[in-house]
Image (tube, rainbow, N blue to C red; front, top):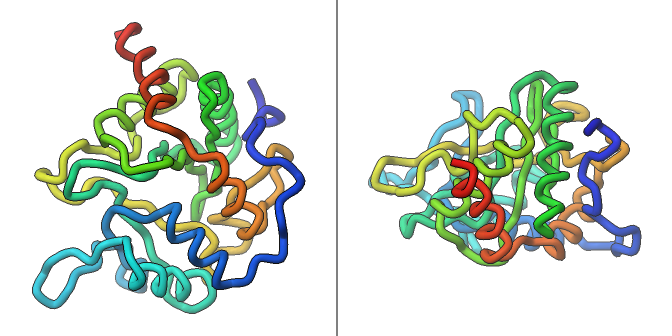
Length: 231
């Protein structure tokens, strides 16, 4: 496989492109909701906490408001996918092999996912490499999501060191977090989802497509089963 296969079958060309910023914000927040919030300021990427030390959650109206400042303001954020119930609403792989090799790995992962009816999105990360991301129709077992991503990496012969989620229980801490794409302060040409022709997807186009093409737990189970058979 090569770059031409990237993100196959990921979006059609009949999406609306007249979404209001408020609609984009709400759809974007729903895609990433469920886990814990991270700040991404001058002191680096770190968990966001209340004054009493408890974590801020990536859910509800407050999270939507924070997403708005991420997309259109000056406060970039990130999220940790794992919830206190040991579930996730999205999963993926952090590919840090440089842009060329990482994009090829992402194309291979997207090809594998497509065989199971799963749409995987490729986002260029902040400095180099990319993230391969899958969004779920509902909160799903973190163990299942991790196993499914490990299976995809195994089949595609892609690096599996940085799979999201990195752990399957919240008892062990926060797990691994991810800087959210499309922030107003992102580096030019980075932290955006790209198409099969390696062009940047506008955020309104992407949130519509990603929302429509979310993955169900049975689809993840079918992919995860391959890892169990191969192990």
